[in-house]
Length: 89
Image (cartoon, rainbow, N blue to C red; front, side):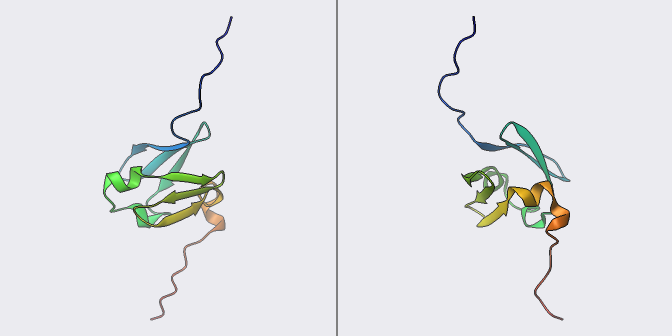
C-alpha cells in the first residue's frame, strides 16, 4: 500500500550547489547548471541574494534582491540568447 503525497513541495525552485564555476538550480525535479561565464551577473553576488530565487511563472525565474529575470529556456539553451553589450566604444 502506498501513501498519498501530502501537500505540495515547499520550494518550486532552489539553488542546490554553488561552485567557483557557477551554480545549480533544482526546478521541476531536474537540475540546471548556470555557469558564471554564461550568466556573469551572478558571479560576485552574496550567497543569500543568489539563494533568493522565485518562480513567478512555470518558465520564468526571478531573483528579487538582484532584479534579475531569466527565462528557463535561456538556461537550457544559452547559445540561443547571446549576451550583447549595448555600450559603444
